[in-house]
Amino acid sequence: MFFFFIMIQAKDKRSNVLWIYLEDVSGWFSCYGETLIDTPNIDQLAKEGIRFDRFYTPAGVCSATRSAILTGMMQTSIGAHNHRSCRANFRGKNMGEYDRNVLDILTIPEIFRKNGYWTANHSKDDYNFDWDSGKLYDYGKQSRLNPDAFISGEMLEGRVEKPFFLQVQLSGGKGGPQGFKVVQPEQVKVPPYYPDIPSVRSLIAEHYNCLLKTDRQVGQIVGYLKEKKLYENTRIFLFSDHGMKLHRHKQFLYEGGIHMPLIVSGAGIEKGGVRDDLVSGIDLSAASLATAGIKVPDYMEGRDFLSKNHKPREFVVAARDRCDYTIDHIRAIVTKRFKYLKNYLTDRPYMQPSYKDPWQVSKDFRRLMAERKMNEVQKVFFSDKRPAEELYDLENDPHEIYNLATDPKFKAELKRHRKLLAEWIQETGDKGQLPESDLGLLSTLKRWGDKCINPEYDRVRHLLKSKK
Image (cartoon, rainbow, N blue to C red; front, side, top):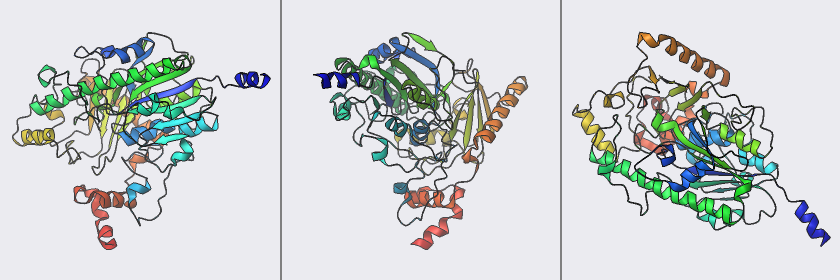
Protein backbone atom coordinates (compact mmCIF):
# COMPACT_ATOMS: atom_id res chain seq x y z
CA MET A 1 0.00 0.00 0.00
CA PHE A 2 2.83 2.34 0.91
CA PHE A 3 4.56 1.54 -2.40
CA PHE A 4 1.38 2.43 -4.32
CA PHE A 5 1.22 5.79 -2.53
CA ILE A 6 4.82 6.55 -3.48
CA MET A 7 4.06 5.74 -7.13
CA ILE A 8 1.12 8.16 -7.17
CA GLN A 9 3.18 10.90 -5.57
CA ALA A 10 5.96 10.32 -8.11
CA LYS A 11 3.68 10.93 -11.12
CA ASP A 12 5.04 13.66 -13.39
CA LYS A 13 2.33 16.32 -13.43
CA ARG A 14 3.83 18.55 -16.12
CA SER A 15 1.48 19.49 -18.94
CA ASN A 16 1.16 17.25 -21.96
CA VAL A 17 1.73 18.87 -25.36
CA LEU A 18 -0.21 17.86 -28.47
CA TRP A 19 0.39 19.18 -31.97
CA ILE A 20 -2.57 18.65 -34.31
CA TYR A 21 -0.67 19.17 -37.53
CA LEU A 22 -2.87 19.84 -40.57
CA GLU A 23 -1.61 19.12 -44.06
CA ASP A 24 -2.28 21.58 -46.92
CA VAL A 25 -5.07 23.35 -45.04
CA SER A 26 -6.15 26.91 -45.71
CA GLY A 27 -7.98 28.12 -42.62
CA TRP A 28 -11.49 28.45 -44.02
CA PHE A 29 -13.04 27.57 -40.64
CA SER A 30 -16.17 29.23 -39.31
CA CYS A 31 -14.29 30.52 -36.26
CA TYR A 32 -12.20 32.53 -38.71
CA GLY A 33 -15.30 34.02 -40.32
CA GLU A 34 -16.10 31.42 -42.99
CA THR A 35 -19.83 31.26 -43.75
CA LEU A 36 -20.05 28.54 -46.40
CA ILE A 37 -19.35 25.70 -43.96
CA ASP A 38 -19.55 25.13 -40.21
CA THR A 39 -16.60 23.61 -38.37
CA PRO A 40 -18.06 23.15 -34.86
CA ASN A 41 -15.23 21.10 -33.37
CA ILE A 42 -12.50 23.48 -34.42
CA ASP A 43 -14.71 26.41 -33.40
CA GLN A 44 -15.16 24.88 -29.95
CA LEU A 45 -11.41 24.43 -29.61
CA ALA A 46 -11.03 28.15 -30.38
CA LYS A 47 -13.70 29.03 -27.78
CA GLU A 48 -11.79 27.03 -25.19
CA GLY A 49 -8.48 28.65 -26.11
CA ILE A 50 -6.89 31.38 -28.20
CA ARG A 51 -7.37 31.96 -31.91
CA PHE A 52 -4.38 33.56 -33.61
CA ASP A 53 -5.21 35.69 -36.64
CA ARG A 54 -1.67 36.48 -37.85
CA PHE A 55 0.15 33.16 -37.83
CA TYR A 56 2.63 32.64 -40.69
CA THR A 57 4.49 29.51 -41.67
CA PRO A 58 8.19 29.72 -42.60
CA ALA A 59 7.57 28.38 -46.14
CA GLY A 60 4.74 27.46 -48.47
CA VAL A 61 5.90 23.85 -48.81
CA CYS A 62 5.79 21.02 -46.29
CA SER A 63 9.36 19.80 -45.78
CA ALA A 64 10.90 23.25 -45.38
CA THR A 65 8.16 24.33 -42.97
CA ARG A 66 8.37 21.08 -41.00
CA SER A 67 12.16 21.35 -40.73
CA ALA A 68 11.83 24.85 -39.31
CA ILE A 69 9.02 24.07 -36.88
CA LEU A 70 10.71 20.93 -35.55
CA THR A 71 13.90 22.82 -34.71
CA GLY A 72 12.60 26.27 -33.86
CA MET A 73 15.02 27.57 -36.49
CA MET A 74 14.30 29.06 -39.89
CA GLN A 75 15.03 26.48 -42.57
CA THR A 76 17.34 29.04 -44.18
CA SER A 77 19.43 29.18 -41.00
CA ILE A 78 20.14 25.44 -40.93
CA GLY A 79 20.49 24.74 -44.66
CA ALA A 80 17.13 22.96 -44.90
CA HIS A 81 15.48 25.44 -47.25
CA ASN A 82 15.38 23.35 -50.44
CA HIS A 83 12.37 21.02 -50.54
CA ARG A 84 13.30 17.39 -49.96
CA SER A 85 17.02 18.07 -49.62
CA CYS A 86 19.84 16.85 -47.40
CA ARG A 87 18.46 13.33 -47.00
CA ALA A 88 20.14 10.12 -48.04
CA ASN A 89 16.98 8.53 -49.40
CA PHE A 90 16.47 11.51 -51.71
CA ARG A 91 20.09 11.65 -52.83
CA GLY A 92 20.15 8.27 -54.50
CA LYS A 93 22.87 5.65 -54.36
CA ASN A 94 26.60 6.26 -54.78
CA MET A 95 26.23 10.00 -54.50
CA GLY A 96 29.03 10.34 -51.98
CA GLU A 97 28.98 11.79 -48.49
CA TYR A 98 27.09 14.98 -47.81
CA ASP A 99 28.01 17.72 -45.37
CA ARG A 100 24.65 18.72 -43.95
CA ASN A 101 25.95 22.17 -43.00
CA VAL A 102 23.46 22.13 -40.14
CA LEU A 103 24.13 23.56 -36.72
CA ASP A 104 24.63 21.11 -33.88
CA ILE A 105 21.04 21.38 -32.73
CA LEU A 106 18.43 19.04 -31.34
CA THR A 107 14.91 18.62 -32.65
CA ILE A 108 11.99 19.41 -30.36
CA PRO A 109 11.01 15.76 -29.72
CA GLU A 110 14.63 14.97 -28.81
CA ILE A 111 14.62 17.80 -26.26
CA PHE A 112 11.28 16.64 -24.83
CA ARG A 113 12.54 13.07 -24.65
CA LYS A 114 15.74 14.08 -22.85
CA ASN A 115 13.53 15.84 -20.32
CA GLY A 116 11.44 12.80 -19.44
CA TYR A 117 8.58 13.10 -21.93
CA TRP A 118 6.99 10.32 -23.95
CA THR A 119 7.29 11.39 -27.58
CA ALA A 120 5.23 10.08 -30.46
CA ASN A 121 4.51 10.93 -34.08
CA HIS A 122 1.78 9.64 -36.36
CA SER A 123 2.57 9.65 -39.13
CA LYS A 124 4.48 12.15 -41.30
CA ASP A 125 7.96 13.51 -40.68
CA ASP A 126 9.40 14.77 -44.01
CA TYR A 127 12.28 16.81 -42.62
CA ASN A 128 15.08 18.21 -44.77
CA PHE A 129 17.85 16.62 -42.77
CA ASP A 130 18.88 13.10 -41.88
CA TRP A 131 17.14 11.90 -38.73
CA ASP A 132 16.71 8.73 -36.74
CA SER A 133 13.07 8.18 -35.81
CA GLY A 134 14.18 5.99 -32.92
CA LYS A 135 16.05 8.92 -31.38
CA LEU A 136 13.20 11.36 -31.85
CA TYR A 137 10.22 9.26 -30.85
CA ASP A 138 9.23 6.55 -28.41
CA TYR A 139 6.48 5.79 -30.93
CA GLY A 140 6.82 6.73 -34.57
CA LYS A 141 5.10 5.11 -37.53
CA GLN A 142 4.46 6.01 -41.14
CA SER A 143 0.86 5.36 -42.09
CA ARG A 144 -2.21 7.20 -43.29
CA LEU A 145 -2.61 10.77 -42.09
CA ASN A 146 -5.52 10.33 -39.69
CA PRO A 147 -6.22 10.22 -35.94
CA ASP A 148 -6.70 6.46 -35.70
CA ALA A 149 -3.47 5.62 -33.89
CA PHE A 150 -4.17 8.33 -31.34
CA ILE A 151 -7.82 7.67 -30.59
CA SER A 152 -7.11 3.92 -30.35
CA GLY A 153 -4.52 4.59 -27.64
CA GLU A 154 -1.75 3.03 -29.70
CA MET A 155 0.47 6.13 -29.56
CA LEU A 156 0.45 6.17 -25.77
CA GLU A 157 1.03 2.49 -25.08
CA GLY A 158 4.01 2.06 -22.77
CA ARG A 159 4.31 5.64 -21.56
CA VAL A 160 3.52 4.69 -17.92
CA GLU A 161 3.47 7.95 -15.89
CA LYS A 162 5.37 10.15 -18.33
CA PRO A 163 3.83 13.32 -19.72
CA PHE A 164 3.66 13.28 -23.51
CA PHE A 165 4.61 15.31 -26.55
CA LEU A 166 2.59 14.04 -29.51
CA GLN A 167 2.38 15.00 -33.18
CA VAL A 168 -0.90 13.86 -34.69
CA GLN A 169 -0.85 14.46 -38.43
CA LEU A 170 -4.08 14.92 -40.39
CA SER A 171 -4.29 14.78 -44.18
CA GLY A 172 -6.38 17.94 -44.32
CA GLY A 173 -6.50 19.21 -47.89
CA LYS A 174 -4.24 16.51 -49.26
CA GLY A 175 -6.15 13.34 -48.53
CA GLY A 176 -9.42 14.14 -50.28
CA PRO A 177 -12.84 14.68 -48.69
CA GLN A 178 -13.49 10.91 -48.27
CA GLY A 179 -17.28 10.96 -48.35
CA PHE A 180 -17.78 14.62 -47.48
CA LYS A 181 -19.42 16.25 -50.50
CA VAL A 182 -21.50 18.93 -48.87
CA VAL A 183 -20.15 21.88 -50.84
CA GLN A 184 -20.74 21.98 -54.59
CA PRO A 185 -18.55 23.90 -57.08
CA GLU A 186 -21.30 26.37 -57.95
CA GLN A 187 -21.50 27.47 -54.30
CA VAL A 188 -17.93 28.67 -53.85
CA LYS A 189 -16.38 32.07 -54.35
CA VAL A 190 -13.36 32.22 -56.65
CA PRO A 191 -10.61 34.65 -55.53
CA PRO A 192 -10.01 37.35 -58.16
CA TYR A 193 -6.47 36.17 -58.86
CA TYR A 194 -7.81 32.89 -60.35
CA PRO A 195 -9.91 32.62 -63.50
CA ASP A 196 -13.47 31.55 -62.73
CA ILE A 197 -13.43 28.16 -64.48
CA PRO A 198 -14.84 24.71 -63.55
CA SER A 199 -11.51 23.16 -62.59
CA VAL A 200 -10.78 25.97 -60.12
CA ARG A 201 -14.25 25.80 -58.61
CA SER A 202 -13.98 22.04 -58.28
CA LEU A 203 -10.73 22.22 -56.30
CA ILE A 204 -12.02 24.97 -54.02
CA ALA A 205 -15.20 22.98 -53.30
CA GLU A 206 -13.10 19.89 -52.64
CA HIS A 207 -11.04 21.81 -50.13
CA TYR A 208 -14.11 22.93 -48.22
CA ASN A 209 -15.22 19.32 -48.03
CA CYS A 210 -11.77 18.29 -46.83
CA LEU A 211 -12.13 20.80 -44.02
CA LEU A 212 -15.39 19.20 -42.95
CA LYS A 213 -13.58 15.87 -42.72
CA THR A 214 -10.75 17.53 -40.79
CA ASP A 215 -13.20 19.11 -38.35
CA ARG A 216 -14.70 15.71 -37.57
CA GLN A 217 -11.22 14.26 -36.95
CA VAL A 218 -10.34 17.12 -34.60
CA GLY A 219 -13.54 16.35 -32.73
CA GLN A 220 -12.45 12.72 -32.38
CA ILE A 221 -9.07 13.77 -30.99
CA VAL A 222 -10.48 16.18 -28.43
CA GLY A 223 -13.19 13.67 -27.52
CA TYR A 224 -10.56 11.03 -26.76
CA LEU A 225 -8.62 13.45 -24.54
CA LYS A 226 -11.74 14.27 -22.57
CA GLU A 227 -12.82 10.64 -22.32
CA LYS A 228 -9.44 9.64 -20.91
CA LYS A 229 -9.39 12.69 -18.60
CA LEU A 230 -6.30 14.04 -20.34
CA TYR A 231 -7.78 17.23 -21.75
CA GLU A 232 -7.36 19.51 -18.72
CA ASN A 233 -3.65 18.74 -18.51
CA THR A 234 -2.91 18.85 -22.25
CA ARG A 235 -2.01 21.95 -24.21
CA ILE A 236 -3.15 21.65 -27.82
CA PHE A 237 -1.58 23.46 -30.75
CA LEU A 238 -3.65 23.15 -33.93
CA PHE A 239 -2.04 24.57 -37.07
CA SER A 240 -1.39 24.00 -40.76
CA ASP A 241 1.90 23.63 -42.61
CA HIS A 242 0.82 25.77 -45.60
CA GLY A 243 -2.11 26.58 -47.82
CA MET A 244 -4.29 24.47 -50.11
CA LYS A 245 -2.93 23.02 -53.32
CA LEU A 246 -3.96 25.62 -55.89
CA HIS A 247 -1.03 27.30 -57.56
CA ARG A 248 -0.83 30.71 -55.88
CA HIS A 249 -1.44 29.12 -52.49
CA LYS A 250 0.79 26.08 -51.91
CA GLN A 251 4.53 26.61 -52.38
CA PHE A 252 4.28 30.39 -52.70
CA LEU A 253 4.52 33.24 -50.20
CA TYR A 254 1.28 35.07 -50.81
CA GLU A 255 -1.26 35.06 -47.99
CA GLY A 256 -2.93 31.91 -49.32
CA GLY A 257 0.35 30.04 -49.01
CA ILE A 258 1.71 31.07 -45.60
CA HIS A 259 -1.01 32.89 -43.60
CA MET A 260 -2.44 29.93 -41.75
CA PRO A 261 -4.74 29.01 -38.86
CA LEU A 262 -3.36 28.56 -35.35
CA ILE A 263 -5.41 27.71 -32.27
CA VAL A 264 -3.91 27.03 -28.85
CA SER A 265 -6.16 25.48 -26.23
CA GLY A 266 -6.13 23.40 -23.09
CA ALA A 267 -3.86 23.50 -20.06
CA GLY A 268 -3.26 26.99 -18.75
CA ILE A 269 -4.77 28.79 -21.75
CA GLU A 270 -7.36 31.55 -21.34
CA LYS A 271 -10.72 30.86 -22.98
CA GLY A 272 -12.08 32.81 -25.90
CA GLY A 273 -8.91 34.74 -26.62
CA VAL A 274 -8.17 36.33 -30.00
CA ARG A 275 -4.76 37.72 -30.90
CA ASP A 276 -3.60 39.61 -33.95
CA ASP A 277 0.13 39.90 -33.23
CA LEU A 278 2.53 38.27 -35.69
CA VAL A 279 3.50 34.69 -34.84
CA SER A 280 5.92 32.54 -36.84
CA GLY A 281 5.84 28.78 -37.24
CA ILE A 282 9.23 28.57 -35.55
CA ASP A 283 7.61 30.00 -32.41
CA LEU A 284 5.58 26.82 -31.91
CA SER A 285 8.66 24.97 -30.72
CA ALA A 286 9.71 27.51 -28.12
CA ALA A 287 6.15 27.82 -26.79
CA SER A 288 5.81 24.03 -26.60
CA LEU A 289 9.02 23.61 -24.63
CA ALA A 290 8.07 26.44 -22.29
CA THR A 291 4.71 24.74 -21.67
CA ALA A 292 6.65 21.84 -20.18
CA GLY A 293 8.94 24.09 -18.17
CA ILE A 294 11.88 23.14 -20.40
CA LYS A 295 14.47 25.82 -21.04
CA VAL A 296 14.40 27.08 -24.61
CA PRO A 297 17.90 26.63 -26.10
CA ASP A 298 19.84 29.85 -26.61
CA TYR A 299 20.41 29.12 -30.29
CA MET A 300 16.71 28.79 -31.04
CA GLU A 301 15.18 31.54 -33.18
CA GLY A 302 11.61 30.77 -32.13
CA ARG A 303 9.98 32.77 -29.32
CA ASP A 304 7.57 31.71 -26.61
CA PHE A 305 4.58 33.72 -27.79
CA LEU A 306 2.52 32.47 -24.83
CA SER A 307 4.85 33.96 -22.24
CA LYS A 308 3.58 36.85 -20.13
CA ASN A 309 6.81 38.65 -21.03
CA HIS A 310 6.51 38.00 -24.76
CA LYS A 311 7.43 40.94 -26.94
CA PRO A 312 5.47 40.71 -30.21
CA ARG A 313 7.48 40.44 -33.41
CA GLU A 314 7.94 43.48 -35.61
CA PHE A 315 7.93 41.17 -38.61
CA VAL A 316 7.96 37.54 -39.69
CA VAL A 317 9.88 35.99 -42.58
CA ALA A 318 9.03 33.29 -45.10
CA ALA A 319 11.13 31.77 -47.85
CA ARG A 320 10.65 29.90 -51.11
CA ASP A 321 13.58 28.00 -52.59
CA ARG A 322 13.81 24.86 -54.71
CA CYS A 323 10.55 22.87 -54.62
CA ASP A 324 11.13 19.38 -56.02
CA TYR A 325 12.93 20.17 -59.30
CA THR A 326 11.64 23.75 -59.67
CA ILE A 327 14.37 26.21 -58.68
CA ASP A 328 13.19 29.51 -57.27
CA HIS A 329 14.35 32.07 -54.74
CA ILE A 330 11.90 34.41 -52.99
CA ARG A 331 11.89 36.03 -49.56
CA ALA A 332 8.92 37.61 -47.80
CA ILE A 333 8.79 40.10 -44.95
CA VAL A 334 5.40 40.50 -43.27
CA THR A 335 4.83 43.45 -40.95
CA LYS A 336 1.64 44.56 -39.23
CA ARG A 337 0.19 46.15 -42.36
CA PHE A 338 2.43 45.30 -45.30
CA LYS A 339 4.05 42.41 -47.07
CA TYR A 340 7.29 42.77 -49.01
CA LEU A 341 8.40 40.14 -51.53
CA LYS A 342 11.88 40.00 -53.00
CA ASN A 343 12.07 37.99 -56.24
CA TYR A 344 15.65 37.08 -57.01
CA LEU A 345 15.03 35.10 -60.20
CA THR A 346 13.21 37.59 -62.39
CA ASP A 347 14.25 35.70 -65.54
CA ARG A 348 11.48 33.13 -65.03
CA PRO A 349 7.71 33.24 -64.44
CA TYR A 350 5.90 32.10 -61.31
CA MET A 351 4.31 29.33 -63.38
CA GLN A 352 7.47 27.35 -63.93
CA PRO A 353 7.16 23.63 -64.67
CA SER A 354 6.16 21.80 -61.50
CA TYR A 355 4.64 18.60 -60.19
CA LYS A 356 1.19 20.14 -60.71
CA ASP A 357 1.55 20.21 -64.50
CA PRO A 358 -0.48 17.01 -65.17
CA TRP A 359 -3.50 18.43 -63.32
CA GLN A 360 -6.45 19.60 -65.38
CA VAL A 361 -6.43 22.97 -63.67
CA SER A 362 -2.78 23.47 -64.66
CA LYS A 363 -3.59 22.68 -68.27
CA ASP A 364 -6.46 25.15 -68.12
CA PHE A 365 -4.22 27.86 -66.68
CA ARG A 366 -1.57 27.40 -69.36
CA ARG A 367 -4.17 27.36 -72.12
CA LEU A 368 -5.68 30.61 -70.91
CA MET A 369 -2.24 32.15 -70.61
CA ALA A 370 -1.36 31.13 -74.18
CA GLU A 371 -4.68 32.46 -75.46
CA ARG A 372 -4.10 35.74 -73.55
CA LYS A 373 -7.40 35.36 -71.72
CA MET A 374 -6.07 36.22 -68.27
CA ASN A 375 -7.16 39.64 -67.01
CA GLU A 376 -4.82 42.16 -65.41
CA VAL A 377 -5.52 40.94 -61.88
CA GLN A 378 -4.82 37.31 -62.83
CA LYS A 379 -1.64 38.33 -64.65
CA VAL A 380 -0.10 39.27 -61.31
CA PHE A 381 0.68 35.57 -61.01
CA PHE A 382 -0.08 34.06 -64.41
CA SER A 383 2.25 36.26 -66.42
CA ASP A 384 5.50 35.43 -68.18
CA LYS A 385 7.23 38.11 -66.11
CA ARG A 386 7.72 38.88 -62.46
CA PRO A 387 8.96 42.07 -60.79
CA ALA A 388 12.05 42.21 -58.62
CA GLU A 389 10.02 43.56 -55.71
CA GLU A 390 6.42 43.47 -54.55
CA LEU A 391 4.83 45.47 -51.77
CA TYR A 392 1.23 44.95 -50.70
CA ASP A 393 -1.02 46.77 -48.25
CA LEU A 394 -2.61 43.78 -46.52
CA GLU A 395 -5.20 45.88 -44.72
CA ASN A 396 -6.63 47.35 -47.91
CA ASP A 397 -5.57 44.73 -50.44
CA PRO A 398 -5.85 41.29 -48.77
CA HIS A 399 -5.69 39.50 -52.13
CA GLU A 400 -2.28 41.09 -52.87
CA ILE A 401 -3.20 42.43 -56.28
CA TYR A 402 -1.88 46.00 -56.31
CA ASN A 403 1.90 46.11 -56.20
CA LEU A 404 2.94 49.32 -54.45
CA ALA A 405 6.68 48.86 -54.97
CA THR A 406 6.72 51.47 -57.74
CA ASP A 407 4.27 53.86 -56.07
CA PRO A 408 6.12 56.98 -54.82
CA LYS A 409 3.67 57.32 -51.92
CA PHE A 410 5.01 54.09 -50.45
CA LYS A 411 8.71 54.73 -51.04
CA ALA A 412 9.42 54.95 -47.30
CA GLU A 413 7.67 51.62 -46.61
CA LEU A 414 9.53 49.96 -49.46
CA LYS A 415 12.83 51.20 -48.07
CA ARG A 416 11.93 50.06 -44.54
CA HIS A 417 11.04 46.54 -45.67
CA ARG A 418 14.15 46.25 -47.83
CA LYS A 419 16.20 47.13 -44.76
CA LEU A 420 14.39 44.60 -42.57
CA LEU A 421 15.09 41.84 -45.08
CA ALA A 422 18.73 42.81 -45.62
CA GLU A 423 19.41 42.92 -41.88
CA TRP A 424 17.63 39.61 -41.31
CA ILE A 425 19.68 37.92 -44.05
CA GLN A 426 22.86 39.24 -42.48
CA GLU A 427 21.92 38.33 -38.90
CA THR A 428 20.67 34.81 -39.62
CA GLY A 429 23.16 33.88 -42.34
CA ASP A 430 20.40 32.93 -44.80
CA LYS A 431 21.95 29.94 -46.59
CA GLY A 432 19.57 30.33 -49.50
CA GLN A 433 21.61 33.29 -50.68
CA LEU A 434 24.22 30.81 -51.89
CA PRO A 435 23.70 28.58 -54.94
CA GLU A 436 22.73 25.01 -54.22
CA SER A 437 25.73 22.70 -54.15
CA ASP A 438 26.71 20.57 -57.14
CA LEU A 439 25.80 17.51 -55.11
CA GLY A 440 22.39 18.90 -54.28
CA LEU A 441 21.69 19.71 -57.92
CA LEU A 442 23.06 16.38 -59.07
CA SER A 443 20.87 14.54 -56.57
CA THR A 444 17.80 16.37 -57.81
CA LEU A 445 18.74 15.78 -61.42
CA LYS A 446 19.22 12.10 -60.76
CA ARG A 447 15.82 11.88 -59.09
CA TRP A 448 13.77 13.97 -61.52
CA GLY A 449 15.63 13.61 -64.82
CA ASP A 450 14.25 15.56 -67.79
CA LYS A 451 11.96 17.61 -65.58
CA CYS A 452 15.02 19.54 -64.37
CA ILE A 453 15.07 22.28 -67.00
CA ASN A 454 16.31 25.26 -64.95
CA PRO A 455 19.69 26.60 -66.13
CA GLU A 456 21.26 25.91 -62.72
CA TYR A 457 21.32 22.21 -63.61
CA ASP A 458 23.51 22.75 -66.66
CA ARG A 459 26.70 22.85 -64.65
CA VAL A 460 26.19 19.27 -63.37
CA ARG A 461 24.50 17.47 -66.28
CA HIS A 462 27.81 16.12 -67.51
CA LEU A 463 28.50 14.63 -64.08
CA LEU A 464 25.34 12.59 -64.24
CA LYS A 465 26.23 11.32 -67.70
CA SER A 466 29.71 10.35 -66.54
CA LYS A 467 28.25 8.19 -63.76
CA LYS A 468 26.14 6.12 -66.13
